[in-house]
Image (tube, rainbow, N blue to C red; front, side, top):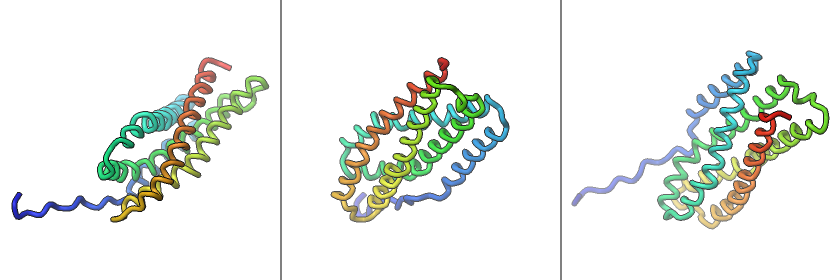
Length: 193
Protein backbone atom coordinates (compact mmCIF):
# COMPACT_ATOMS: atom_id res chain seq x y z
CA UNK A 1 0.00 0.00 0.00
CA UNK A 2 2.90 2.37 -0.48
CA UNK A 3 1.96 5.70 -1.92
CA UNK A 4 -1.78 5.12 -1.53
CA UNK A 5 -3.88 7.08 0.91
CA UNK A 6 -6.29 5.21 3.09
CA UNK A 7 -9.79 6.50 2.47
CA UNK A 8 -11.67 7.89 5.42
CA UNK A 9 -14.81 5.98 6.33
CA UNK A 10 -17.91 7.20 4.57
CA UNK A 11 -19.94 9.63 6.66
CA UNK A 12 -22.92 8.08 8.38
CA UNK A 13 -26.32 9.68 8.02
CA UNK A 14 -27.51 9.80 11.58
CA UNK A 15 -31.17 10.30 10.72
CA UNK A 16 -32.23 8.30 7.68
CA UNK A 17 -35.79 9.28 6.84
CA UNK A 18 -36.08 6.27 4.53
CA UNK A 19 -36.80 4.26 7.70
CA UNK A 20 -40.13 6.10 7.91
CA UNK A 21 -41.46 3.75 5.21
CA UNK A 22 -40.94 0.82 7.57
CA UNK A 23 -42.57 2.74 10.40
CA UNK A 24 -45.56 3.59 8.18
CA UNK A 25 -45.87 -0.02 7.03
CA UNK A 26 -45.85 -1.32 10.61
CA UNK A 27 -48.45 1.24 11.69
CA UNK A 28 -50.65 0.37 8.71
CA UNK A 29 -50.48 -3.32 9.69
CA UNK A 30 -51.50 -2.38 13.25
CA UNK A 31 -54.42 -0.24 12.04
CA UNK A 32 -55.53 -3.03 9.69
CA UNK A 33 -55.48 -5.52 12.59
CA UNK A 34 -57.52 -3.13 14.75
CA UNK A 35 -60.02 -2.40 11.99
CA UNK A 36 -60.41 -6.08 11.09
CA UNK A 37 -61.86 -6.86 14.54
CA UNK A 38 -60.01 -10.18 14.22
CA UNK A 39 -58.92 -11.38 17.63
CA UNK A 40 -56.14 -13.45 16.04
CA UNK A 41 -54.73 -10.57 13.95
CA UNK A 42 -54.79 -8.11 16.83
CA UNK A 43 -53.25 -10.63 19.22
CA UNK A 44 -50.55 -11.47 16.65
CA UNK A 45 -49.61 -7.81 16.14
CA UNK A 46 -49.61 -7.13 19.89
CA UNK A 47 -47.57 -10.21 20.81
CA UNK A 48 -45.08 -9.83 17.94
CA UNK A 49 -44.43 -6.14 18.67
CA UNK A 50 -44.28 -6.81 22.41
CA UNK A 51 -41.84 -9.69 22.00
CA UNK A 52 -39.62 -7.62 19.75
CA UNK A 53 -39.74 -4.57 22.06
CA UNK A 54 -39.03 -6.59 25.19
CA UNK A 55 -36.49 -8.88 23.55
CA UNK A 56 -34.51 -6.06 21.96
CA UNK A 57 -34.59 -4.03 25.19
CA UNK A 58 -33.29 -6.94 27.26
CA UNK A 59 -30.74 -8.01 24.64
CA UNK A 60 -29.39 -4.47 24.32
CA UNK A 61 -29.26 -4.00 28.09
CA UNK A 62 -27.75 -7.31 29.10
CA UNK A 63 -25.67 -8.28 26.06
CA UNK A 64 -24.78 -5.36 23.82
CA UNK A 65 -24.39 -2.73 26.56
CA UNK A 66 -21.75 -4.59 28.60
CA UNK A 67 -19.84 -5.51 25.43
CA UNK A 68 -19.89 -1.92 24.17
CA UNK A 69 -18.48 -0.60 27.45
CA UNK A 70 -15.37 -2.75 26.94
CA UNK A 71 -14.71 -1.74 23.33
CA UNK A 72 -12.23 0.92 22.31
CA UNK A 73 -13.84 4.29 21.66
CA UNK A 74 -13.44 4.29 17.83
CA UNK A 75 -15.07 0.85 17.56
CA UNK A 76 -17.84 1.77 20.01
CA UNK A 77 -18.46 5.01 18.11
CA UNK A 78 -18.66 3.22 14.74
CA UNK A 79 -21.05 0.61 16.14
CA UNK A 80 -23.33 3.16 17.81
CA UNK A 81 -23.43 5.33 14.68
CA UNK A 82 -24.71 2.36 12.68
CA UNK A 83 -27.07 0.88 15.28
CA UNK A 84 -28.75 3.88 16.90
CA UNK A 85 -30.16 5.51 13.76
CA UNK A 86 -32.18 2.33 13.21
CA UNK A 87 -33.13 2.02 16.88
CA UNK A 88 -34.43 5.60 16.91
CA UNK A 89 -37.16 4.47 14.51
CA UNK A 90 -37.61 0.84 15.58
CA UNK A 91 -38.11 1.11 19.33
CA UNK A 92 -40.72 3.91 19.37
CA UNK A 93 -42.65 2.10 16.65
CA UNK A 94 -42.66 -1.14 18.64
CA UNK A 95 -43.71 0.74 21.79
CA UNK A 96 -46.60 2.46 20.00
CA UNK A 97 -47.80 -0.75 18.36
CA UNK A 98 -47.50 -2.85 21.51
CA UNK A 99 -49.41 -0.41 23.68
CA UNK A 100 -52.06 0.51 21.12
CA UNK A 101 -52.74 -3.05 19.99
CA UNK A 102 -52.75 -4.15 23.63
CA UNK A 103 -55.36 -1.52 24.53
CA UNK A 104 -57.66 -2.58 21.68
CA UNK A 105 -57.11 -6.25 22.48
CA UNK A 106 -57.95 -5.68 26.16
CA UNK A 107 -61.08 -3.80 25.11
CA UNK A 108 -62.06 -6.55 22.66
CA UNK A 109 -61.59 -9.26 25.30
CA UNK A 110 -63.52 -7.35 27.96
CA UNK A 111 -60.54 -6.85 30.28
CA UNK A 112 -61.43 -3.19 30.74
CA UNK A 113 -64.74 -4.24 32.33
CA UNK A 114 -63.32 -6.74 34.81
CA UNK A 115 -64.26 -6.35 38.49
CA UNK A 116 -61.68 -6.01 41.24
CA UNK A 117 -59.43 -7.84 42.20
CA UNK A 118 -58.87 -9.09 38.61
CA UNK A 119 -58.89 -5.50 37.39
CA UNK A 120 -55.68 -4.84 39.38
CA UNK A 121 -53.81 -6.87 36.74
CA UNK A 122 -55.21 -4.61 34.01
CA UNK A 123 -54.26 -1.51 36.00
CA UNK A 124 -50.77 -2.94 36.59
CA UNK A 125 -50.34 -3.56 32.85
CA UNK A 126 -51.48 -0.02 32.04
CA UNK A 127 -49.15 1.50 34.63
CA UNK A 128 -46.14 -0.48 33.42
CA UNK A 129 -46.79 0.26 29.74
CA UNK A 130 -47.26 3.96 30.60
CA UNK A 131 -43.96 4.04 32.51
CA UNK A 132 -42.15 2.22 29.70
CA UNK A 133 -43.59 4.55 27.07
CA UNK A 134 -42.99 7.80 28.95
CA UNK A 135 -39.46 6.76 29.84
CA UNK A 136 -38.79 5.58 26.30
CA UNK A 137 -40.05 8.76 24.64
CA UNK A 138 -38.98 11.15 27.40
CA UNK A 139 -35.52 9.82 28.31
CA UNK A 140 -34.20 7.07 26.03
CA UNK A 141 -35.20 8.46 22.63
CA UNK A 142 -33.92 12.02 23.27
CA UNK A 143 -30.70 10.61 24.75
CA UNK A 144 -30.20 8.35 21.73
CA UNK A 145 -30.67 11.32 19.43
CA UNK A 146 -28.28 13.54 21.40
CA UNK A 147 -25.59 10.84 21.57
CA UNK A 148 -25.88 10.00 17.86
CA UNK A 149 -25.74 13.63 16.80
CA UNK A 150 -22.78 14.31 19.08
CA UNK A 151 -20.89 11.18 17.97
CA UNK A 152 -21.42 12.15 14.33
CA UNK A 153 -19.35 15.31 14.89
CA UNK A 154 -15.66 15.30 13.97
CA UNK A 155 -14.75 16.15 17.57
CA UNK A 156 -17.49 14.77 19.85
CA UNK A 157 -17.70 16.12 23.39
CA UNK A 158 -16.93 12.88 25.25
CA UNK A 159 -17.54 14.21 28.79
CA UNK A 160 -21.00 15.34 27.70
CA UNK A 161 -21.68 11.95 26.09
CA UNK A 162 -20.45 10.25 29.26
CA UNK A 163 -22.91 12.27 31.36
CA UNK A 164 -25.78 11.41 29.01
CA UNK A 165 -24.82 7.75 28.99
CA UNK A 166 -24.80 7.50 32.80
CA UNK A 167 -28.42 8.66 32.80
CA UNK A 168 -29.15 6.35 29.89
CA UNK A 169 -27.68 3.30 31.65
CA UNK A 170 -29.80 3.93 34.76
CA UNK A 171 -32.89 4.40 32.59
CA UNK A 172 -32.25 1.20 30.63
CA UNK A 173 -31.74 -0.77 33.85
CA UNK A 174 -35.13 0.45 35.06
CA UNK A 175 -36.59 -0.22 31.59
CA UNK A 176 -35.33 -3.81 31.80
CA UNK A 177 -36.96 -4.22 35.21
CA UNK A 178 -40.25 -2.90 33.82
CA UNK A 179 -39.97 -5.25 30.81
CA UNK A 180 -39.65 -8.22 33.17
CA UNK A 181 -42.64 -6.91 35.15
CA UNK A 182 -44.77 -6.72 32.00
CA UNK A 183 -43.79 -10.30 31.14
CA UNK A 184 -45.01 -11.40 34.58
CA UNK A 185 -48.27 -9.48 34.12
CA UNK A 186 -48.86 -10.76 30.59
CA UNK A 187 -48.17 -14.31 31.77
CA UNK A 188 -50.96 -13.85 34.30
CA UNK A 189 -53.32 -12.72 31.51
CA UNK A 190 -52.47 -15.80 29.44
CA UNK A 191 -52.90 -18.11 32.46
CA UNK A 192 -56.25 -16.54 33.21
CA UNK A 193 -57.34 -13.87 35.62
